[in-house]
Each structure stands twice: as structure tokens, then as C-alpha cells.
Amino acid sequence: MERLGDLQLRILRVLWQHGECTVAQVQQHLAGEQSRVLAYTTVATMLRKMEARGLVRHRSQGRRFLYQATVSDEQVSQRLAGYLLDRLFEGSLAQMVNHLLEHRQVDPQELDRLEELIRRKKGESGT
Amino acid sequence: MERLGDLQLRILRVLWQHGECTVAQVQQHLAGEQSRVLAYTTVATMLRKMEARGLVRHRSQGRRFLYQATVSDEQVSQRLAGYLLDRLFEGSLAQMVNHLLEHRQVDPQELDRLEELIRRKKGESGT
DNA sequence: CAGGTAGTACTACCAAAGTAGTATTTCCGT
DNA sequence: ACGGAAATACTACTTTGGTAGTACTACCTG
Image (cartoon, rainbow over all chains, first blue to last red; front, side):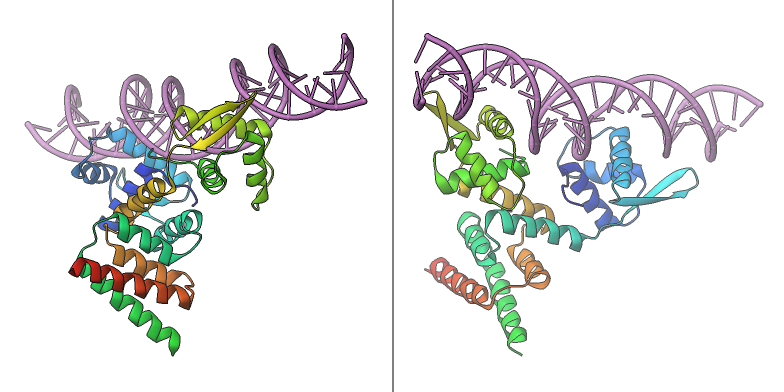
């Protein structure tokens, strides 16, 4: 579950968000995003490849397949975020946050939430 | 400057850290990390491919090439972190931090630094 | 000066992602 | 019952990353 392509990630997001989907549904949800419409077979092929890699699984409903993710949002997020953290910020969360605070607009509410998170985290580790 | 392979990133990191390098130097620094030693030509080829993509450039020193990165640490970090943030955390920094706080060990010092960062950020936006 | 060494150039190959066409099957509606 | 629609299976092709061998060249050293 190392490297994850762009389309693969988009498909996983669809499945996380909508649960079991037919190929057609996945295709529609992908199209619902900004991007251009992918051929039905493109989506189907990608799903088959992802199944071979263990990222999704399917069951049959009539002659149609219902796909669902076998990896969780959590798992993937952790893996990818950890990857980035280690490779670009020497594993330092503070360094990463610092970077993002400097280079992206951050909603003031976000800052409040962040502050709260840290307070809470400090509390629990102190206990 | 979208997708960045693993080796490519490692090479960039070497160049960011050490500045201009010959192929041999890049190879050595890569070997200095944990991983197995790559063939000299592997490194050379990768550098040539990266130059074609505009990630690095070279100048000649005698018959030897000195490579240097043309993209900055900043740029790459921003791009990759932003990518992840948008794709997995709906652009919410707090969500990402929350996730990382839950799933990784975080040094208490890191929490302090984080707190400080946020305080500072709030201060400056308030002004 | 000759021969090894260090350098680059070129070529090749594999795997994976992404994209999609064609073939085959099956189901459903009229 | 039949024809078209819908579904999956199979095949194919392109690009990119990663890895490295071979060929060619030039330099330096004894």
C-alpha cells in the first residue's frame, strides 16, 4: 500500500464517501468533481487493477460489481502524511505546520481549532 | 513539477543540503543514507531525466557535471503538502494535525513549538 | 606515450499508472 | 423473442520512474 496514484486516490475517496459503488457510480462521482469525464472502461480497468493490489474488493449484485475500499481513509492518510513528514520535514510536525502556515492561507477558525487540539494533546500526555 | 518519484526526491534533498554536486557526490550522499548503493549510471541517468523535466540543471567543470536543484525545498514542500492537505484533509490544516497527533508519536517539545507557532500566527493576523 | 580511470551518452528493460478500445455476455424492455 | 443496452474481460498503448549495462571519450599518471 505504498505508492498511490492520483486516480487511485480519487477513486478511494469516492468509495470512502459513498460506500459500495458500481463502476458507473464511481465514474459519475469522479465526473462530479472538476475533471473531465473518464471512459467507463477506464474506471473499470482501474478498479480491477486496484483490486489486484488489494486496495478495493468487490461483490456481485446480479451481473454488476459493487466495489468497496479495503483500505481505510485513516490508513492511507497516515501512510501518506507520514511519508511526507519524514521526507520533507524530518519528521517534525512543527516544521510542517510552520511551513503550511507560511505558505497557505489559513482560516482563523483553523488556528483556534489547532490551538485547542494542542492544548488537549498536552493535557492528555501530561496525565 | 507535479508528481515526484522517490529517488527524485531523495536526490533533490541531497542537492538542497549540499548545493552543487557531481554525480559521484550525489551517489555518495545517497549511499550515506540507509539504502543500498545505486549504480553510478543510475544516478547519472536519473539526473539527466530530472534535468529534462527541469528539476535540476548542470554546468560543466572540466568534463564533469555539477548539478544543482532548480526547484526549491520550499516549492516542493508546499506543492506536496498542499496536495496532501487538499486530497486527504479537505484543505484543513487542523484536520491534518489532528490526524497526525493521533497516529504518530509527537515529541512534547514539538507540541510546545507548535503552540508557539500558532500563537505567533494569531498575533500577526490580528495586527 | 600507453593504459587505466572517471565521466558522460546512449540504449534497454521492467513495473505501474492511466487511458481506452474491442469482444463477449447477459439482461431487460417492447 | 429479439435487439439494444449495460456489464465485465481482455488487450493494448503511452508515460514515467527506476535501474543499469555498454560504448565512447578524455584525462591523468607512471
